[in-house]
Amino acid sequence: MNERKNSMRALSIAILATTILVSHQGGSIADSGQGTVAADTGSEYGHNCDGKDGAVGPNGKYGTNRRDGGNCTRSDRGPVTVTPVLKTTRTVSGQPIELPKTPELNVAIYKIEPGAELKVHEHPFPRYAYVISGDIEVTNLDTGKTRNFKEGDFIVEAVKQRHKGKNAGEKPTILLVMDQAPAGEKNVISK
Image 1 (cartoon, one colour):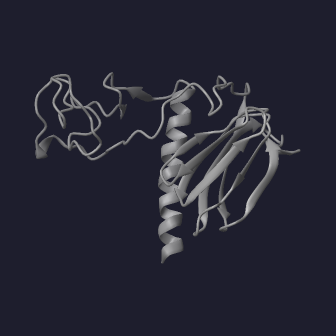
Image 2: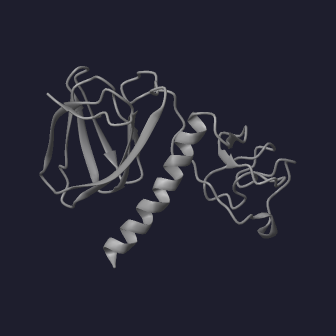
């Protein structure tokens, strides 16, 4: 049952992540102008009127996200809620994200057992990872910085910089990993 739950969660996250990637390439997801990302459903309301995501409406009140500035009510909630995870133009090491001209999207789920380490490697093209569960410690050997990512974090990995990762926790780390590389090209180069 737990694996089924993780699979369903991973599928949901893959859809969300693909939406984020599509919007990065000029797709149909739009910034609502209030620091949130909203699906364009044709509604007069923003993406979320329940206030649980910390949305602040134009009148500055928590939990108000109607485009007309009014307070949200139960009847204002639409059938779709989009909770932003990340909006950036840069990798974790500050590099600008540069997509290949015609990228192929490859998505995989990584399960990293406690104590396991990912060998030193680099990515010639953009790679994104969403931490479904657990946590991962990533050390960038080129910058000398180490960062810890936990459940719910979205990582825009460094490009052409040597790095390694390890699960220093007590439970498996599960990552949803997405590569955008030219068709047929590898995006992991061991060093």
